[in-house]
Image (cartoon, rainbow, N blue to C red; front, side, top):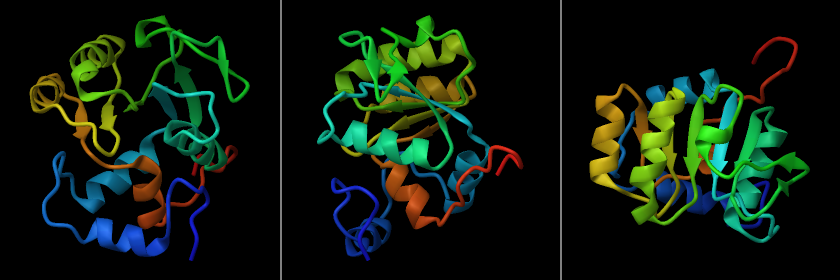
Length: 168
């Protein structure tokens, strides 16, 4: 079974990924399901306009699933036809989740901004980890997921798309 986007290789990859031993940012499947079902607005930090980049594929997947995606990239004005903001503090709307596609050394500043704007979740994509920033976010009451791909987890858990009229 092929996944919706080419950067996510195959269903077999998801099975191997989900069967790994304890990962950083370990939340249970039930907790992850709940946060993905309750989330509506996702700021994607580091969203690239390049179609071949993982951030772009994940954002397209999230949009197709009914999430409101807000690009955060100071280098571009627009990504996927959506206004891009230079940082989280510039976003005028409430944000439920901050999905990070930046190198790990950039995470502390992003986490501080996520706390400042009142986000509920900080999600660090595959390969993105920062234990101190995670502890800071958790201490501020945010849920933290590290070193996981939101689109892989969404598909693995079989979460239904958001129905704009019904809410889910």
